[in-house]
Amino acid sequence: MKYRNFSTGLLALCLFSPSGLWAQPSLDEILSQMEKRGNDLNSMRARILQKKWTDILEEFDAGEEGTFLFLRHQGEVHLRKDIELPQISHFVISKGEVLFYQPAIKQAQKYQLGTNKDKAEFLLLGFGTSRSALEEAYEIRLLGNPELGGRPTYQIELKPRSDQVAAFFSRIVLWVDPEVWVPIQQMLVEPTDDYLLVNFEDIELNPKLKPSQFQLKIPAGVKFLG
Image (cartoon, rainbow, N blue to C red):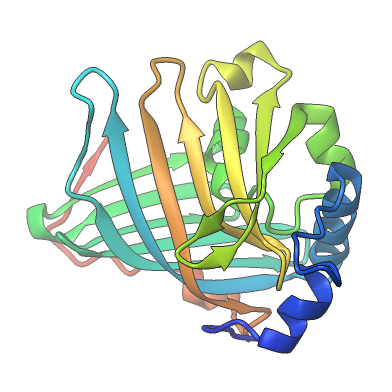
């Protein structure tokens, strides 16, 4: 399933009341729709644009652009992020192992995910995460229904209940697309108020992916750190 543009008819039915105003659903209804989508979501492919805000400087960095994949297969979660601009890099999580490879400087890092599993999978929040798991791990609040790039969204704030998780991110904000009920933007806010802003574009839901697509071949001569 792939979308680039909204269907006018679907928007009229799902997003607006007969009076032409927003048909604002409750948080309960939004979470139910997200869970319904998540129940049949096993894979995703998207373009990804991300940039980091540094609060003390009050500015974003130059940002990065690339592709993002995820797959659930036989109880395992696989992630892959391939940055194309401004400099090529590859980040893969597969079978509990993390591999980060920077071809330009011929360096790579490999380590077992272990207790950092939750942190590494924050990008999957809203993509098939069960409602019970979200409510157990986060205090959830509906912030509103802002437009994002001309698209209507529902903006949801997640505040970690665990101090351990809050040490990584004090809060997470999702902009949920009511056509497909997955986030099209995430903001991962650190305790310092620095944050990573991630946009997902050209989203494909349940494309045919294989675990082999989450394997990186590292050429000879690459130095492994750590």
